[in-house]
Amino acid sequence: MDLKMADYCIIILYFLFVIGVGFVIKRKIKSSNDFLASSRTIPLWITSLAFISANLGAQEVIGMVASGAKYGIVTVHFYWVGAIFAMIFLGVYMMPFYYGSRARSVPEYLKLRFDEKTRGLNAISFAVMTVFSSGISLYALAKMLEIILKWNFDISIWIAACIVMVYIFMGGLTSAVYNEVLQFFLIVLGFSPLVIVALQDAGGWAAVKANLAPNMTHAWKYMGDKDANPLGLHFMSLIFGLGFVMSFGYWCTDFLVIQRAMIAKNMREARLTPIVAAVPKMLMPLIVVLPGIVAIALMQPALANGYKIPVDESGQLNYTMTLPSLIAHYYPSGLLGVGITALMASFMSGMAGNVTAFNAVFTFDIYQPYFVKNKSDRHYLIVGKCVTVVGILISVMTAYIAKGFNNINDFLQLVFGFVNGPLFATFLLGMFWKRTTAHGAFWGLLAGTVGAALTHGLTMAEGKGGWIAPLYEIKSGMGQAFIVALVSWIVNFFTTILVSLVTKPKSDEELKGLVYSLTEKQVDHGGPWYKRVTPVALLLLLITIILNIIFF
Image (cartoon, rainbow, N blue to C red; front, side):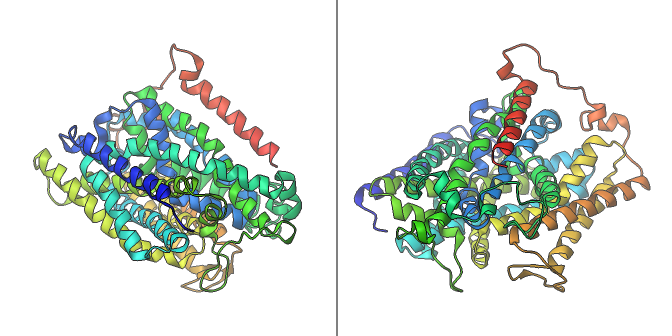
């Protein structure tokens, strides 16, 4: 791929803009709460787009296109099974606890509901997960620049990391949130023409279906037999592993996305944030799944037009490069710059989201309670900025770990299985069963994480895992991640119940506002239906069910 001057101008203009946002926001940063939590001043349309954009990183964009090429249309399950239902549940049932408790982070809520040790365990595991996720974004961008632009891999990593560090260091979470909104529009506008052109070149959706195996173009039809679908999973494993454990575990407990709802101006907007964000999330498969499916169709003999997905060192298709190779094949100069900028925006969005979540959790939930207590607010503001730099440096190191996976989305889902799988069991019991105790939550989280590690160590998928003893072979890395998450949730759930039954719970007075049965219910009053939580949630549920039926 050969970039022209017009392409470089577009890329440079984007870099100057995101850094400029940091300079503008810097003047408003007066306290640690401003830097790490935006002081709950952000309007609904910003929080909603930031909510979806924080998840729309390189893992989402490049990873889901890669999964579309590798697994076919079953990848839409990450949206219509593995996202919408959980986002609606978060807005309707869980945001009142997060927002009403005035907690600054998810681990801080765990401290209020349980105790300090539960908070500490979650804070440490979440901090590790965020730097891994950030590193995956960084790796994806650097690898893309190396392959399609012939830029040096190491130099690309450091330049990109420095740009993200600068605008977060100056403007904190607010700077990241406003840039995420810009990045959302860049991603949509940058990739939409690619979908249209590639689909036309393939001869339309009918031609794509005619040139691919049927199990690549049906979402549910072949899920009744694990050997008949690309994921290698039975539909029950999909529903419970992805649709329940991983989906609810991510969208309902991951501070990265919940942080965007927690900075809303009031309770109603905090609850509406994930629900409004579900609208663009529902449509994202058109931009991030469909291109991958079309890419595989274009490589079939009947449609051969010179397009190919690159191969890795072992000679296997490098699915991670599906989207960059499509851009290189179809976009001319000028539009090529827009496409590359959109890819960079996806990286910036994902990495910045993880870094802002990391610096908040480390400062509020690790440094302040365990290392240096009762210092001035300025002290914690300085620490938050220093932690931002440290988080970027750790992300650079983890970027090199991601090189061992031919689909970064497989790696990312595995990381989520270790952290979010067991965590959702803790939240589900903690919020809806007041008998859950602090000891039960702690030992449940620990047991769930150990269960995830043992499952990964005893199973193999595509040559990965089985580091204890490869007793069971799973068809795909994605399927292995689902199984890991499901086992971790089950182990946590029953361990928490057993330990809670033999230990002392908190009193009802201590749990007011933290448990469903002891919290005043949120009721929509006044205003048009599209500004109320329940009607919008029900409408989105109906549309999601219809989409699953259409693409059965």
